[in-house]
Amino acid sequence: MPTKQDYYQILQVERNASIDQIKRAYRKAALQFHPDKNPDDRQAEQRFKECSEAYEVLSDPNKRARYDQFGHEGLQGAAVHDYAHMQYDDIFSLFQDIFGGGIGGAPRGSRRRSERGYDLETQTQIDLRDVAQGCQREIEFTRQDICPTCSGSGAKPGTKRRICSTCGGRGQVLQRGFGGMFQMVNTCPSCLGQGSMVDKPCPHCDGAGRSPLQRKIVVKIPAGIHDGQAVRVRGEGEPGDDGGSRGDLHVYVRIQEHPFFRRQDHDLVVDVPISIAQAALGADVEIPTLFGKSVLHVEPGAQFGHVLKLKGLGLPDVRGGRQGDLLAQIIVEVPRKLSRKQEQLLREYAASEEHGVLPVQKNFFEKLRDYLVGTRTESDSPAAAGSDAHKK
Image 1 (cartoon, rainbow, N blue to C red):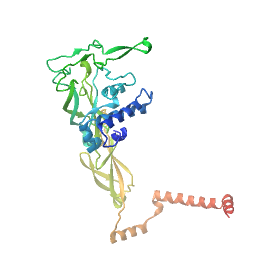
Image 2 (cartoon, rainbow, N blue to C red):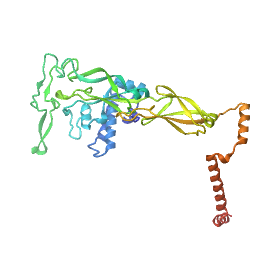
Image 3 (spheres, rainbow, N blue to C red):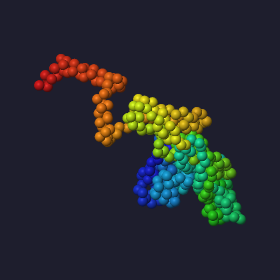
Image 4 (cartoon, rainbow, N blue to C red):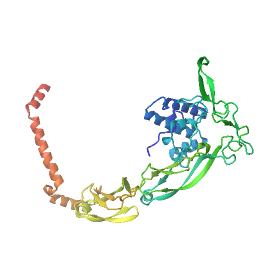
């Protein structure tokens, strides 16, 4: 998953900014980057969603405290709305108390009734062994759910919502336009577009019909999953309006770094250090695997950077395809310090070396000889001599 930008930088506020300052900064930024003002501008739409996510965290005292102390990692389990997959009209409806008169047909209080609830997102961490065999993780998060006291009506138990007398339950009213010639449809100012009102609000949710609910679920993470991919848990998002279906929970997976292995798609890469003697003479070297150890046979004459493949010791394809391999990359270590005996032996070996039989060295010196001959030829050319004369 890409690295997220600092929420305070997104809203361009100081870290000690008050709630009012954060609210004003969000309103300014959200109106600036709203897609209705920036048609067909995907970058502006992304900025709009980033601002909304930043505001949701920084306007909540608990989420903000966790973010201030631990950064983005501190928000694990504190489910936030999945802005990456939300429509911008839905995002505006989440924060309808901020916008007095919206743009793009979203006036104050005109929360659009959706058939489906909002999606949520959170994240969890696993290691490469979990990736190799799949695993389960217990996920804790909080979502806005139907109030258990009023069953979502917002009315105090024993009372009911009543039809709005201003709009007659339609949620909209007619208003005469310029010169009294036209009529415009506006959101009802009394019920804020809901069509009904509460005289005695529920004491548990204060008439909202929703209240925070802590959830703890077990999520199955498939083998072969990549860092930043998400597991979707259907029906664990927020409830829809008017009995609509629930949204989903997206659990983004972060994979911890391994002390030995680097991942290349389905393969694992491990650096295997060997000595000069082992590289020249060959050796059997013990190397780690995800589930223990194995013996790697190094042929005599192994070169730095040479890769040996151990079949089937990598990671599985998340779609159920092939099994990856373990790629052992040879690292020939040159000793920094030698004992007197070691130095003497190496000097004796150096004296007996035949550079002409070492292919890489031979090729290098042949190229160097040709290069130096060409350089001397160019320096003796008339053009070079003229250039020297001009300098004089």
